[in-house]
Image (cartoon, rainbow, N blue to C red; front, side, top):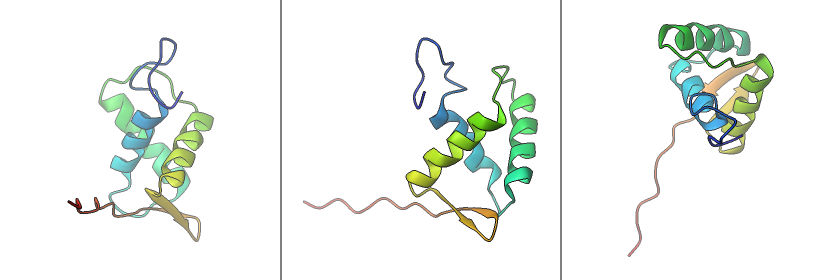
Amino acid sequence: MITPTKGIAPDRCLLAVGAQVLLQLDEPRSVSQTWARLKTWRAGHGHSSPVSFGWFVLALDVLYSMGAIELDQDILVARSMHAAPLER
């Protein structure tokens, strides 16, 4: 479910849908704006595997649990992610 399996196409797994959601969050947007943009983006890039609104919400849950997005006054905001420096 989170990663591709025999029953879940690679472009439909939650990590892939989450990455596609992050592409739509180049600026803060409402959930409905992000959902509309995601559907348009997927259609424009030839992703034929269906993604329901429930699946979209699960992708948001994954992103939120990873700290990649936050909800601020009903607006989705992508958080800046920086890798920690390597310690030797």
